[in-house]
Length: 170
Image (cartoon, rainbow, N blue to C red):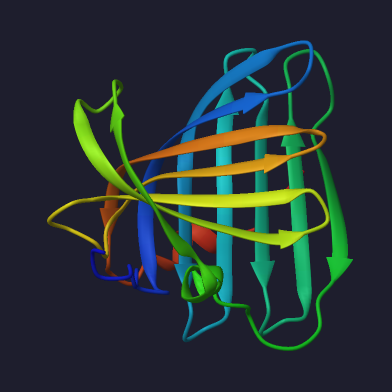
């Protein structure tokens, strides 16, 4: 069994996302970033229909902002309260089991796959390079409402720029 991955909790990543549901698939590009010290997290993507979804969690301020913009509609921003401290982005990997290797045609490499199911219809997977176990290459989230596959085109274990966590004005 290869070494268990331990990706850093502070990072910046350029991502390609596939969202699958029973009746359609949508592709998008974006970025994920987390500053674990400050308690900031963002996941942002722009999809093929030019809809942009951005979730910014600012645990130090106690709020999460969900921003959506789409062609021919007004942008919107939902604000939700947050309590506590930022959860570990990769915390579930400590409970994952090695599920074997898998060739990936998108990146032309064989990945080590780690799998975790907390129950309630969820299954998480992390794919890492065979010689770079702490650098995420892909994640899969399988759930009853649909699946999400995320490719990490670039993963940098550096503190993200503060501008990544700026709440858009609408």
